[in-house]
Length: 343
Ligand code: TYM
Image 1 (tube, rainbow, N blue to C red):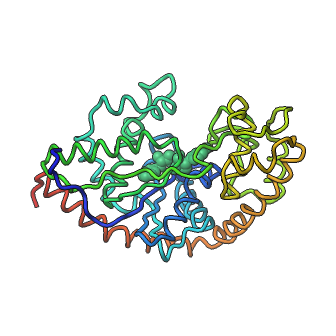
Image 2 (tube, helix red, strand yellow):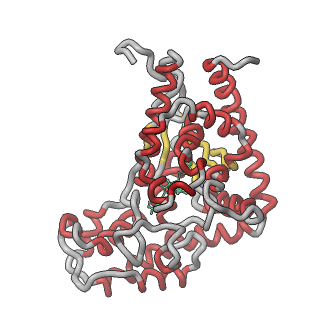
Image 3 (cartoon, protein in one colour):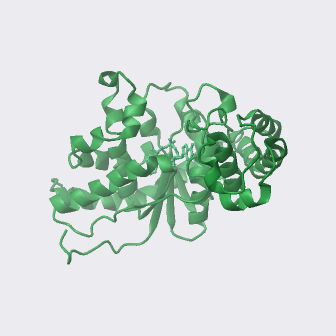
């Protein structure tokens, strides 16, 4: 782009999404959902989808997918996403995502995708057997964002590389088709003390739904007793909490619990350290459990109420999809004109 190229001047829009497989956990909540809710309250149009197209990049059970989508949507709403303010929908019900993904597959370069660390992690040693969809996963993610011309994308730290790719794809599209200012360069919103929550059993591993040990994570569906028990059993070290954050650098489990406390309290690691310096985990863990239960038990209760009313969730998803289509439809039509499709 030249210095005089027009930059994007459209409205602020927010988009994000989560995979429906395996239930949501504390990492999803603190890394993303808390920020989804905060952005929703600022009044920009928000689009929060359940990414079922992404879910089929790995082996899945078709009989379980629709309920998994409902459960993810219920977790969004239980966490504070308000379907009156934000569009909550299944990605597959807005076909423009898949259409734009194809066009972006012809814009993105093979070399860009080969650098994606999440593909390497998920494909494992035998990448020849991975689905092509798993390889092009981040291209579909770029389409999810840009089909709404979204300007801001609230995610956890692990999505930074995918967001950079989305910006590269948008920029390359505008250069290839000589249409500066057509797309925004979407900004990642990675903020707060919980952008990278680690396993409760191993402070060097990300908290994840694929971890075989349920004790490694707090699920958004866990009741108060389960939350408290998991925190009690969380791995720690024998030392007391230090009086400065730097001293947590080589204590991954301690750093993680301090980060979780800070994120749940809406404060910073520095503030938590100032409050608990010199105290051992025997004192800190019960306080953390109390705070976690106070914050998360209402989410679990609301989640339990919602999943007992699947018809209500289906109404939300249908209405959200309708609202999403009214924005995505004109964008995909414009894109088709830009690339020269017959119509
Ligand atoms: P998924 O389902 O793997 O993760 C959903 C969101 O949760 C965040 N997250 C975490 N944050 C902090 N600590 C953790 N341990 C942790 N684990 C997960 C992720 O960063 C993410 O924000 N590819 C996306 C889904 C997606 C998407 C999109 C996101 C598809 N299209 C468009 C934004 C925009 C993903 O990782 O989902």
